Picture 1 (tube, rainbow, N blue to C red):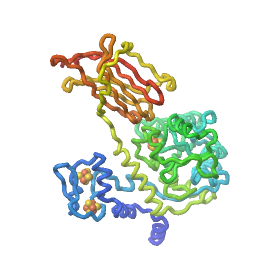
Picture 2: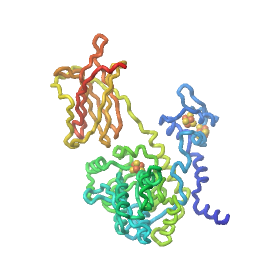
Picture 3: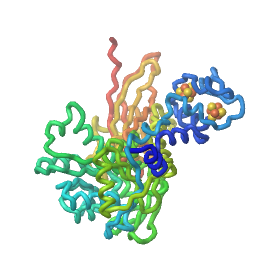
Picture 4: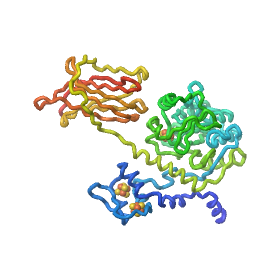
Length: 496
Ligand code: SF4
Ligand code: SF4
Ligand code: SF4
């Protein structure tokens, strides 16, 4: 390539990492962001670098954090020096060879979900006999909008599979089935977490696919910000009056989740992502990959404008496929520019730092709301009635630990349901013979999936000695009724 050609390329595909690095050191990454993302999130290591590099910052030894002592110009230097911020574009969205804005030319898909680039690529791959199967996620015909992973072997099914379902799907099982069925060249379409699974199976020393590598797998990753627990979000939609069997499309656009009864019309309902946050799969809280960094080709809707896709070719084969598919008319590609890229970087950064903000509640204060003990028949030990709507599913897992020093029993309650539990009423009482005493009642507004809270219930002390009695723990919610009841036998901790 001549120098001129290379300059031309650089102009045309104005996405170079140097350029973005320059942008990141610009005005946006201010001291305010450092405080919000790092200091207030509790992940500051107190290294003092920020204060050391800026004349208007000093280290506040009293509170152990940087303090402004003059006017901040918003130069972003403190943010960019901090060891805890993520500012490198490669760290934010992985390496890629070329970026494009793509949109489909397949008539059945034009105007449908986003840009339809993945459908275009599938049609090209089948027509050119470059793949003999693809693993995709489709809607379960028996269960509206529940995902089901499928092996498809022709482009007609590829067209039917277009559209997004924002729930986890077990795609790798379908991939293994495809390999067992002797398909040799397979396109695997999946979310970044599923792409990671396949990538690990292909490349890690103990990777299963590495040793059973009879097939070539092309990894096509979908950008992904969140997915939702179907039981939780669909029962919410039902309460909102949405008929799932009529829904034709769901999409996430500009921070809003839209539900459509028709591809052509306005959404029937729209929600901010924050409103739906409580229905999010708990694993997504810990996910840092927006753009499917380990794929051959990554496709998403952010950064490309309406009805178009952002498409990254990350490997040589990925680049060849996109360019040849475009040459043969399956999709139209345009150069990806720095404005497009900044939108992706912004969202990628939000995702990388979002896990810093996960709050774990360790101690919850209980209130004694009943002065006089109420007399009740003692419940049976180990009795765990469950709500009729939840069947035998375990909703809470509860454990206890005596703290002799504080003279309390710590009751830990973990949400094991996998979806947010709202307005949980918890009642703890001591049980002596047939009677209950010292009832304590508290309520928790929201308990997130797999979140644990600890409640300290005071033990009875007589003449300086702790009295070890049985303790009954009961929990109920407005939605499900009683979800937990068990009597714990308390015993003095064994002395070492
Ligand atoms: S002026 Fe100082 S505090 Fe403000 S952004 Fe720049 S380095 Fe940070
Ligand atoms: S540079 Fe970052 S980690 Fe170090 S003290 Fe400042 S905010 Fe904390
Ligand atoms: S947010 Fe992450 S974990 Fe959740 S579905 Fe997307 S890629 Fe998977």
